Length: 177
Length: 456
Image (cartoon, rainbow over all chains, first blue to last red; front, side, top):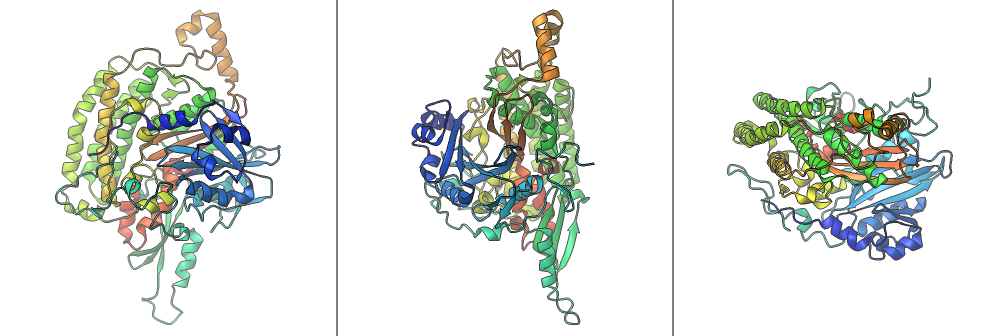
């Protein structure tokens, strides 16, 4: 039939990679996780990094997001899971875009982060992963972030004539009256 | 570690029988960088409604010329169509009965759950997670609880973890029963629907007995589970599990040899492994395309690494393969449930964290300390250390992730759900293009969509 579940491959990988419990900053993470596939593959593009609760977060410059996505894909993170935004209003840059990538082979997940301010745009990664299509439309709809190069950036959840972007922190929970 | 392809029934002509499973095939090198047969990303992008209408006007013959040839029709399907399993709306461009292009329109069930979560305490979010994917409430609860527990770095007692596994698998059975029943009914086999709902009723009674609710259970909470299950429930579950495999045989007896069922499923809705990965497909449709990946086995959570089970994989890539994979998954789920019952450890059902988990009623009414904790948790919630985490579980429909961001206060700063249906819907056009309109119904049934999880 199919193989039987023996042992725990994910934990074995995590344990071999994760020496410290948490470390912050590009230098510290690069040093601690020198063997990590994502650190190797994205070395030139990382501007900040975080290893926290056994999760790797790599911050890249918003201009390089397509290059970073392609580099991550080349490093073995073949599956685009998810993309969403966090609104850190009133701090600047306001939007944190989090891309969650998975490697079927390494059985690992990484998070790519790009930070952009109000009115700034970011390139669409649909050329790397077509599955980013709906996710970018959702972020455009609910946060008002514009993705350049997206084939058809229209609202996906809210009606086309909706006023405002509901998941922004300055949008009231009850909506505008 | 090589998965073995499921045996097809003898009467079946499997599609691409000799293809090796995707992850072991030679087309993938160790980095996954060069994937042979990868289509250009643009080909896979699902169009918008405007594109479909635009494409159709482009296919209209000029006025006064041949009206029948060179002309396509735009058909609106849903949102109130029974076979769209909820409120999915499809705009389909048709050439005769052949699909030229197809665009889904979603958002009819958008309730802004992610926004609402930001205004609630962490514990108050749990009941809302039930309502996202309303066919697998326990799985939603588990995914959310795992994320918050990761932020809090809580140790969950073994008994709670095993009970989570047990109820996650029972939920999988329940969800797959709804899938099979509605899928078969869409194809025209009404009897199967009635049989599936008969067994589902037993499962809902079990859920009602443990949580007090049939569907919106909220049973799995941050730090463990809400209450100890009633003592006689294990006997009821065992009785159900003992008879359930024969019920699966019964469904298969009704369907497998049925020429209409075979004709409507086989070779329909083809989706290659490369396309499935490029389009974000997860769960049974991904495994039916030959990709051997299951979160329960490959990135285990909640003690799944201690259970012995098989991950059904098929290379059929069609609707039939998805049917076979899900039927086998039900059998595996029964095995997991039995292991969970046999090896259920003794002990606490919640973590030892009095400032996070509500004390039981007895303690609250007799001990001052517990009363204070109870009052504080209910009125102020509990503070969660700042950070961001992703939890991932294998839901019945595919991979379900919860992304929770905390700013150190008692309310989540951001909760985002990655639900399988949202991504799988993007593969709909790839599966339907060039096929007949009737196949759309079979394909929608095979990806098992729940609009609650897509629209949130």
